[in-house]
Length: 112
Length: 113
Image (cartoon, rainbow over all chains, first blue to last red; front, side, top):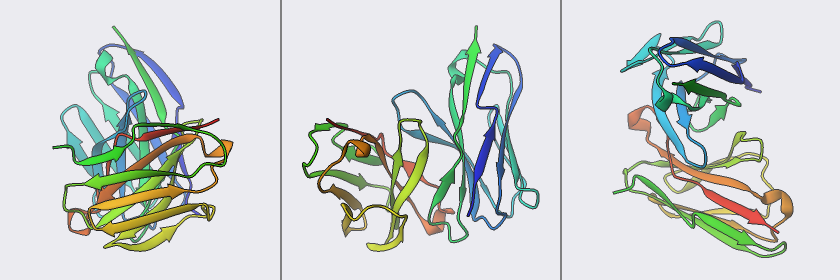
């Protein structure tokens, strides 16, 4: 059974720092991996999707990598800003692509 | 022009009642989902529908019954509500032709008293 773990559970950094969020999963037979952002009381916003055949994806200050063989992904946030404060969720899709299995998230707080 | 919409946004009801949550997507996607986010904020898949057919049912009590009248809609009906059903329910959609990237609705916060 697929399990997704995110480390750390919470992170506080001053504005301007570069940071890395970690995600690991137990079964490498995945269709893709998505990183989401969730603000308090809000829905999920898709940040990046990495297909199982890809190694990384970039969007603005965000870069996500995928090492499927070792069951790991990282989300790199460059030059963090207070507006980046949110919970970041990692999710892997089952092999058919028809369900996401989520980690418990990393809650990020960026202070000005 | 919201991509995935849910109604209602909030739902407060008493134990034993029956309630429905509606979801609509205007993205032309072929797959829709229901997820449950519990009090500890953990998200878990409940159901997955592809072209109106149920393809995933993740050990959800029979009191929960999804219904997909067409590809753009996936409703969730809950019978005999229990205190433990209190959670935020998210609808999502994706498309095989777009790498199954999932787009989520704003959520429905269900409170059972």
